[in-house]
Image 1: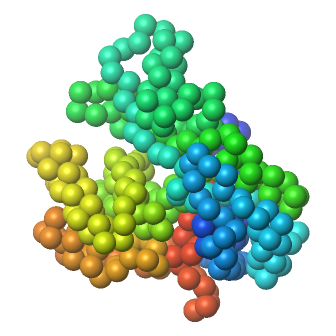
Image 2: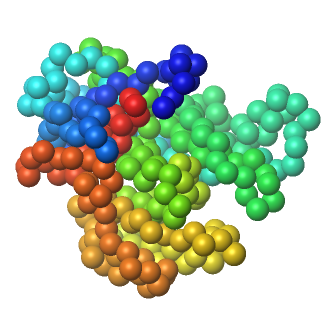
Length: 311
């Protein structure tokens, strides 16, 4: 149980979140339940492809008025018109993620920050002054070097989404990439590693979790026909390079999200790479109760994962 000091230091996040993709918007409110979480209210709606064109360095919201009406209708259908505080996850292609390693021991905190900012610019092709950056400490690598999982979005892109939220009178504090919400369902501290494969229109993101922390993150932009080869390559990298020799840990949880992916084929590829009896996890497997058959876990996993951070 968190201590009172932990509750004071850690900001209280809302139990409601919204998720945006190029062709889909979802909204969810969670409740805590025995042994997990239950969806209290939720809805999703398909968006016309011409409304949002997700991009890291180009305008995203092509028709703000229509997106605004869609989000307002979405909140109404979920019974969340009076909800004001949300977290939000953005389309994967609108963001970038990278693991940044700080070699050696910087002489001061200022020097460490300068090295970090230089690494950010090299990783994302833009100075940190042009980006909204979040970072999460990761476990040190084999050489005991400091590592961070870093998510970035350009200010001019973020401003577009924040303008939508303000027009709806939503107070949105936490804004992260889609996969950052989905990976929350693998942060359950089990002994083995968890693998998230989050497929989207432009490719996929693979996140490897060990305990409560990400171990490796790879985002691949590729055609649908290339996904299987790219996924197999990443899984072999994990098996041969990331897994620590002599440790008993292995991938024992596989979460596959995305309608444009053959989940059975992903399971086959994972079994070929790891030689283990894996299966794709369902909502109930990760501790989420979805009360209606009309609600799609794939559509809700990302915002529900951010809403989970309220506890």
